[in-house]
Length: 208
Length: 170
Image (cartoon, chains in turn orange, purple):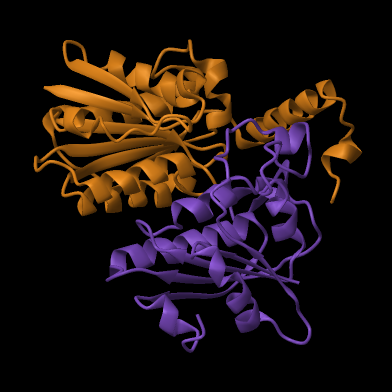
């Protein structure tokens, strides 16, 4: 079996999506995996012929305003226009959201499903992970433990479907941390960065 | 002020202005001049250049324009139930219309408003044979965007003939 991972984050190798891809790869031992990055500076569709050689494609990207980041959307559209070679490949997707609740990613997953159908590929399933802003801070926490206990369970079901080439309902989950704690930590993080950049609280709130 | 974002040829700007302008509201039109950059996910619009996008390409103030308008009008091809890549570039670059602080509303998180203003939003999606599934996604997307940008949905319309939808004025 061969799996293609497509990283749709504009941050590429330094992204939460990359962390997620590495975690998913760790769950598929002895399977040939290749990674591609659709970044804002590279959106080639030449890889279509290569992708046609895989059994499953797994997208990983950050939720951008309830949807797919524009550079990835642009790539998906151009792939549709170019046409995908006729082969029944399963498409799966993991979205990470800055908001706490994983359900925010539902629309983006449905859009990837819509694209899959338009290019005659099979839609498998998706996972949307909320509280994604803290993911880099817990990247060394093993899946299934502590703040990753929910995520570990979700990925297990997800990878099970990938390996069996089956479909299932999407899973909406989040990093296991109280919402109040996540909210405060995220806000303090933004304030701290703003202060380093010379902004006061009043500056952060300014209206043009 | 009405803010109109569209992905048609920018030669349509003037005609669209006349379609949507009225005695009480001027229309500002944002269209594609092929210079619009993609969002780089830096969050500088919140913690460095607060209120504007740090990428200077003429589209850096779209967030404030959305936040301050009375009505946002979007004309977009319906792509997988969402906006076209150009319109989505603008939406991605517009998160400065809200603050990097959160509130919980009806059990879900969203950003707090920056501008004490809740514009209405009207969306006109166009495309050939837009499926019922894509229409469902589109309706949910506009509702979600409106919720997160503190807007009120006025209408979400679909057509396979964008040139006919405005009485042939386009």
